[in-house]
Amino acid sequence: MKINKYLLLLGLISITIAVCLFFSDTLDQYLRSYMCQILMGSSKGKDIIFFGIIALFLILQSLFSDKIDNFSKSGNYYLKIAIFITIIAIIIPLSLEVIMRLNLGLNIFTTFIIPDPNFTSTSLLHSHIFKSVIGNIITSVITNIPSGIHTASSLTHFVPWIANVIVIILPVLFLTSFLSLKDRLTPSKILLVFSLTCLLIGIVDGNLFASPTIIGIYFALLVFFDEMYFDYIFSALFKNKKMLNCFIERREKYRLKKKKSKFKAIFKRTIPHIVLILIVISEVGLAFVGSNQNYGADYEVDLIEPNINSLNLSNLSFNLDDFEVKSFIYEDNKLKIKLNSKYPDKILISELAKVLSNKTKGFSLSWNIYLWLH
Image (cartoon, rainbow, N blue to C red; front, side):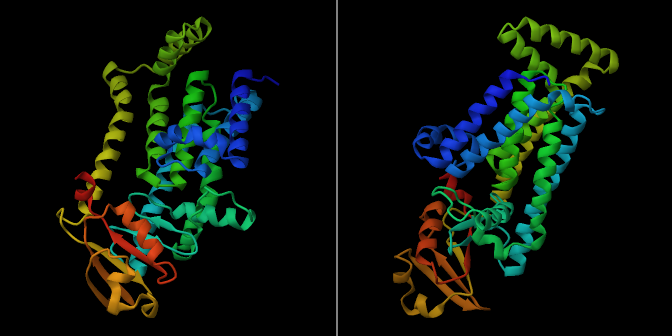
């Protein structure tokens, strides 16, 4: 068996970090500030999963690289399948976010929050649909989940049953991602392992507009469309003659196999950047379209099946900790409240979840991007 000792070493280091994070908070204190830049609001659970998946990729690749090299299809063939599965895994939660709100009679462009038994939120801009399914499985298997690991299992009761398809999607995506490492130089393998790990995490926690998903898509496409150029830069930068010679040999074989125009080659290199720009534009555009149309607009809060007796409508402002209630209407088993827009939405969501705990099954909060930009 041919073992890549460098990949194996990196894999063992990664699994050691994941184990240390699971059983202790010490290391997490040092890593959190760095990981939050990659994983979009890093948590202990995300960090453990990140290093665990990287370790799995690297250790399996170092042990079985010679076996997957015997597969007839190229690494890019499997990466193409992984990208296709990713597209499906992105479309499903976005669709279910819409369906869930229509079933609950809520505005599509809102953040939906479940205060009990564990605080959970979800929206088109940051979906936890798939996370709730995986979290529900985790909580049913592991009784004592360490603090700092958020499962979003409270959302499970509201999520359409088809969301369970993630249980099939994740293993298939991991397998095709693993096979996509075939016949690549070490720099591309490491970059692909990093990007596909981010992608697996982002699909579950945040979906399309989450940082790990965007990072994963961008670098996966970069390897898919521009693998050789990346390998060349790395080899030249570190003056690795062996890798550089390997790159030159592969480039010549590639040129003989596929003769392409210079324009087409340049265009393919720009595709990852174009996709990145389109995702960012889509996120900003969605936020503007779904937001209240002016800076001073009130927040709109819709409570589902509220406990009217515990809320005490005659003194609602007091019950909501002086959030400056502008108005409230009770109809169709929902309580519609308007609140002053001076509060940042993240703070408001957190405080409302505390105040409305055991007083409603869930509630939605409107967006106001103009407040974010202020």
